[in-house]
Structures are given as C-alpha cells and as structure tokens.
Image (tube, rainbow, N blue to C red; front, side, top):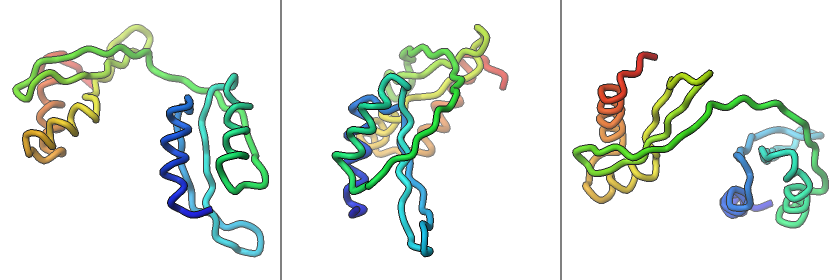
Length: 137
C-alpha cells in the first residue's frame, strides 16, 4: 500500500471512532519490509474496523487481540492565560487530581497566531498550570 494512504487512513479511522492508531516498520516472511498498521478501538467497534481495514487498505488479512485498558478520569476546563483562554485536560486517579495538560490544538493555534515557538509556549503554560493548580507530581 502506498505510504500516502496512511495519512488518509489515520484521519478516517480516528473520525470513525478509533481510540488511537499507530504504525510500525517490520519485516515479514522472506525478510520483506512492511508497515504494520495498528488500530486501537472499543470491543464493540471491532467489526466496524475490520470492515474498514479490509475495504480501505491493501491487506489480505487481519490479526487482532483483546487488551485491557486503564485510563484516568478526565475533565476539561478553560483557564485564562496571558495568551488568552486555553483548554486544559484534568486527569484524576482514584478521585485525586494528578495531571493537567494543555490541549495541543489550542497551543498550536496560539503559537501560529502570535508567532511564539510552540515549545516555549507549552513550557510557559505548564508553569502557569502548576502554579494555578499547585500539583505536586
């Protein structure tokens, strides 16, 4: 399958409910290079993604496995910064707030619109977040 297709597949599958997608460079039988396409989805969506992979890729077969998943409880809020309002994701574990992360798309848009290096912007926002929420990792 042409490598150009992976970008399309990634966007389509995420929009259709995939939890995540990744690729790996591998070698198949007879030492042939290949790309392994991995789709993480909810168990209820398995058949939908099997159909999509068969119809949207060049594969002749699919292997699948069931995995268990543990996630933090998530909430979203907006905080005011010197750059404007930014959405942050709050991560809770056993009812305790343990992680706060600025949303990438908000940071990217501010970086572009205000011509601020993304890395510097994210570092500044993380500093503001830690100061505001007083999180001790």
